[in-house]
Amino acid sequence: MCVGMAIGVTLPSPSSTRWWWGGGVGVAWSASLFYMINRGYGRTLLTASGMQFHTFVSRRSIPWSDITGIEKREHHARSATWWDLRAVRVRGRPLTIPGAFTSRLWDAEFDNKLAVIQEHWTHGRSG
Image (cartoon, rainbow, N blue to C red):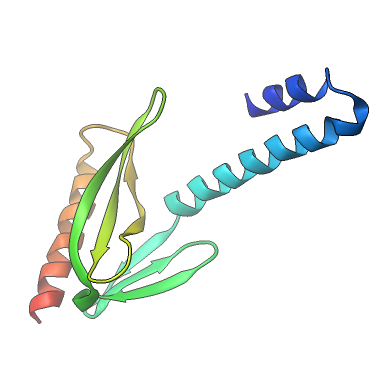
């Protein structure tokens, strides 16, 4: 679809501006694809001291004492709905937990991930 849009935009335009539109659509499409893959295939390691996020481009460690809660967030797009998990921090913006998302309304595996993360968070805060 994105390739078709890029071709449709570039063909009727003068040759001097064709590369600009096609390149712009290609870059935007590539960035959104990388964002989805990075979030979806990232990993989160739960330890006694906190959470360690591992993605293709970053590593981050958040101590349990910096987290005030784990929330399930729902997203809507044109014809899609999906859910992910976020760690709400004492200071700063909430962080999306890599590798924890679903597009199914009733997903036992996703709900299990939420329960396990909340259990580790509860034990990490009290211990």
